[in-house]
Amino acid sequence: MLTAALGNDGVQPVGAALEAIASRRSIRAFRPDPVPRATIEQLLTLAGMAPSGSNIQPWNVHVVQGTKRRELSRVLLEAHDGGAEARPEYHYYPKVWRAPFLERRRKTGWLLYESLGIARGDREAAHAYRGTNYNFFGAPLGLIVTMGRDMEHGSWIDIGAFVQTLMIAARAFGLHTCAQAAFSNYGNLVRRTLGLDDNELVVCGVSIGHADLDHPANLARTPRAEIGCFTTFHWDEE
Ligand SMILES: Cc1cc2nc3c(=O)[nH]c(=O)nc-3n(C[C@H](O)[C@H](O)[C@H](O)COP(=O)(O)O)c2cc1C
Image (cartoon, rainbow, N blue to C red; front, side, top):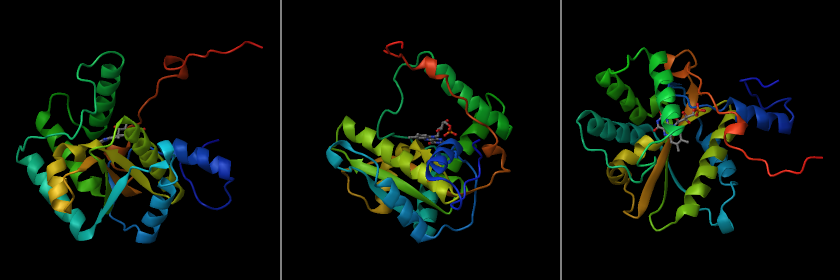
């Protein structure tokens, strides 16, 4: 049986992999407890084992902690609260929403806002909550994942594999994560604050830390479609 808690000791490797996959979920409130740099280095080494087309490994990572993390959060929160126009680095979502994606998206938002006690239509509260993205949800550190602007669609797949590998590996250290496309809303500010080249496209952030499991933001669980909704078997019956 899968349990949410994963330790390093006494767990069979295959079982541990399943535990790590099943216990990953987006955490949106962290405790401030520090995470050692050596752990982050191990996580990045593991994430770097992700596959990529022709092994080109197109990911770049900026680890932001301490002073730089605080500065980045301040700059982005000022922009968010000051009503600065968000200019996403890329289109994450379809330009025209359709079933079943629109329903799933709405449901996910409502689940989260319900657990936070944010009423439907309370735009002010929703705006304030979205701002917590830029504080890495209270995590002591985060990653900014970038790639060259000249890269093509294949590299987006590779970076997805990298980020997922990192988030799964984090579970083995008792850590939780949240991938955050929100950081791509203000790519220019991220680049300016971290001193990045114009060619570096901000793909997403990733908060990393110890979950505050009692916080309402972490109470909601996202459902999943049954495999029959997305799978067609072209399969010989025996
Ligand atoms: C690339 C990527 C970007 C995401 N960006 C955000 C974000 O900006 N803010 C946020 O709160 N959640 C973000 N999420 C988390 C998703 O909302 C979450 O993965 C989804 O609702 C499924 O829930 P789960 O991760 O708990 O299984 C992102 C997830 C991915 C994979």
